[in-house]
Amino acid sequence: VQLVESGGGLVQPGGSLKLSCAGSGISFAWYNLGWYRQYPGMQRELVARVSTGDHRTYADFVKGRFTISRDNVENAVYLQMSDLKSDDTATYFCSAAIGPGTDLADIDYWGRGTQVTVSS
Image (cartoon, rainbow, N blue to C red; front, side, top):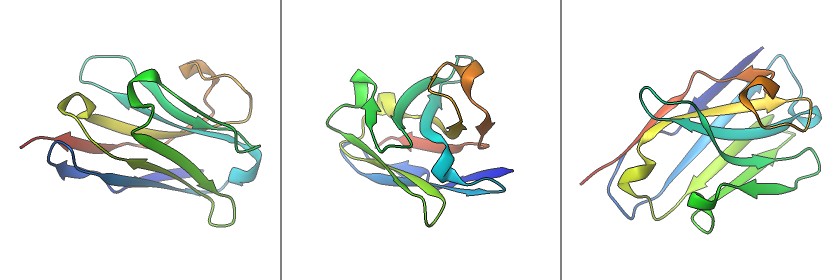
């Protein structure tokens, strides 16, 4: 099983990025998918999640700025990020969980992460 993120990079404050996560070895259709982020030395935190039924939830700090979506045919999950702020600078990880939980221990599979840096 592999989850591979792409789309990270350097962007100016107020800019946009779209992260992608491609899965292999599992069928995303059966999994609740998410994006987490991690600051150096800190625990990963949930950014957004989309359920198998396409119900979407967001952390308060990204509501109205980020949009998560899934494509079960492409076996992919995306995170459209807009109005980026310096506090959004972090490593972003995609996740797949067969169950409904969002705690780190509930996640079955992780990607390796992609760095997002918001700076002028």
